[in-house]
Image (tube, rainbow, N blue to C red; front, side, top):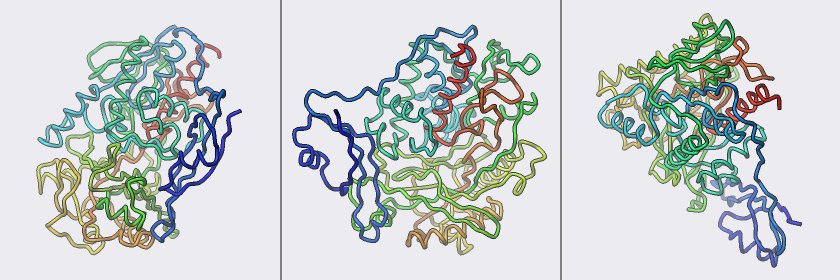
Length: 515
């Protein structure tokens, strides 16, 4: 029998040396989990790795990870999946495992062409409303840290991780506690996934938008595309992401049940990577540990407001990632090596529906985001060219002043000096100041003269939830309509979006195939 064991090693200890000493004569080993614990490293406590290892001896074999899928055959009408981000692609992938072909519709281009459009925006300010950091094959996750961290508990999490490995992700993706692919690796994986789907008979339409979801009373019957085509189906999956404002407006007109949702708004903070590494690892800074991460939170009990770090990108870049020609949004990304000279993170303040914006209109949260993004763009047009990002030194933000000179930055579209108080609502700016003072106590040196804030970070999550049944995953108001992923309010990252796509696929299979 194979043996599964848990143990700890100092970060600089050799794993195979340990195994040879403690399991003499072993044939092979497989890592089930590897997690870094660097708490206290900045106070002299040596970082450790927690391992869960399966060891086998001669004549033994590892238990198989492989899932078995019965061939179920196609639905009477191919399901239509709107959006080729993680939710949409994994929905299509799971259906294909059972021999069920689907139609995937993506408003943007394939990943390699999408890259060209984005590069032209960052360099020449040539904006494309359908090919940008949020829209196109791979969705917003294509330009992120490629983080696969998730707090959800689902048997499909391991399926998603294993599938990424099957399509070429590094093997450790399946077992490290905080896996990340980096933006550069995830682009290649997405292409392999879509190529595989085509080989399985799926149809994928690029550069075309769903203008209308068609209904017979409260039952879906198909979609109308921007090129005039009508596609019929009694199963429509909405995996459009959290920035598809046109779809939200269309669903409101069709009286699809939606409710306003809380989200968060703030800035991107950028430090030199070497500083963050030192603040987290102290004298133990080492290549074995990689670029340091952090997670910071602050809660004001008086007004019940939270300020927290979000989507931290070690050794990464800050991107201009808006979806409107007259709006600026920032986001973070990093490549697999996480080796840029900077580290950044969102620092955001909670925005509560019914408290910080009226819920009279279900889309008021979206309008709240949009107003901030337009202010940032107007400032950029006044002081730069419309593509550069409003930026302020962190210390200046706290002291209420604006320095003209700014340090070098990772942002490819450029930055300009500007007071962020004129972009952000007062309660957001106040929450950020309180949070930053708290964070500097937890990580002394976090506040320093070379750190900068870039704004605004508004697209932390969807501003609405498209209500669906917990049992069938269908819309509560319209049968055959499946809200899915981040844009529907049911996910918060690559992994959870992919898992939600799998859940929706299984729900459709249960309905159509009675299994």
